[in-house]
Image (cartoon, rainbow, N blue to C red; front, side, top):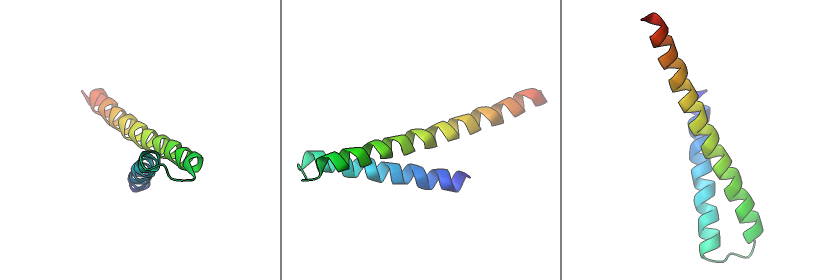
Length: 66
């Protein structure tokens, strides 16, 4: 699951950067690029949320052991 999340996060970064350059250089299909950028942001946020929840879950397990 972690590898899928890492791939999703990296894909999100690539999509967000592509949308940034689309806006910067005024590409013709700017609406499509902005939609792709939004999807990239969603992927990035999802990956961060997964890793934060995983970290909290591991911390909870260690806390219960004490």
